[in-house]
Length: 180
Ligand SMILES: [Zn+2]
Image: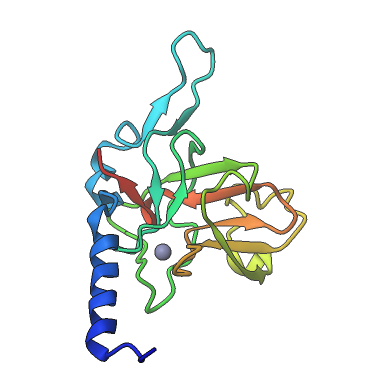
């Protein structure tokens, strides 16, 4: 058997690429939906229910354009509001906390990590070094902070969780959304 030629390898790579590009999910950045949020991002509870819980109406994706990693499916996270820009925006990170139109929206996830389609976690960081005392979950946290990161490309932090905890929070402006 002869070794594959470079042309064969290139052809194989190209066909892989075209397979992958065939059905890329249609996603939009948060900025395109922010002005009509939360209505553009949430469903309210079913009619007749006494709950006023709003859940995500769209699939949530990694914010990196072209990554396409699904973070969580529709209906799996609850819309909550808290102080804007709780997650640090480090220098050189693709996230810049928007000082002009900061988002107060966060996706609250219970049953972590099983509620996620795909999620990664950072190494643990001391709570006081990671989050302000006003951040949801900090009061009563018994473990250190583990940042949520993309399971495929490691981009983050997209949100936070606590060691040993089953709850997690995603910043609504650090995700891409299913286009529909
Ligand atoms: Zn990613």
